[in-house]
Image (cartoon, rainbow, N blue to C red; front, side, top):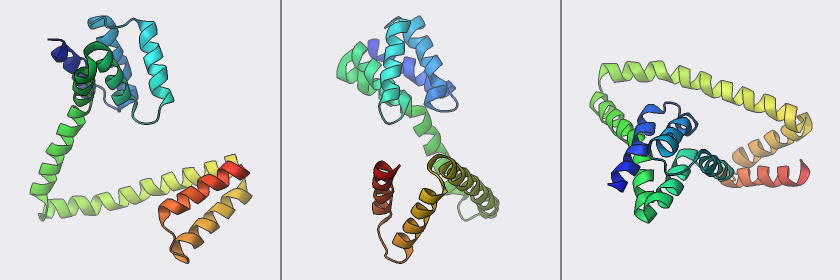
Length: 175
């Protein structure tokens, strides 16, 4: 019975928590602290702080920890599975829908309409990135990184992962 409770405690916030992990945190707290009383508010706050300190998605880290505390290793597996299952089910449904529409006029129209939107969104992200880089790192460092990255990628055919590592090392030593 405990594993069903763990599953429901994380599956329901996964369905209702539109906006990802941060949006589902209050819903998880409601289930874990109020409904099932597996921990008090202070303990939940400590789990949340620990989850924020570690890299990766917050919802799955919290699910793994709380599931382990309540039901051991299998409880952790159940909690993480319940957390990712709503998104996984939606992705499988949408992939199936897109697969059925592939090759139809509706799909081609949808693809044609989405491309400019994606280009605009990428442009906005690039503008925000560069404006923040100029403000935070200074124009000289930003220009050096842009030119060096461009040359490494185009003229010297350096793998993009190595260009990213170069940027990290540059920032670590000079910024």
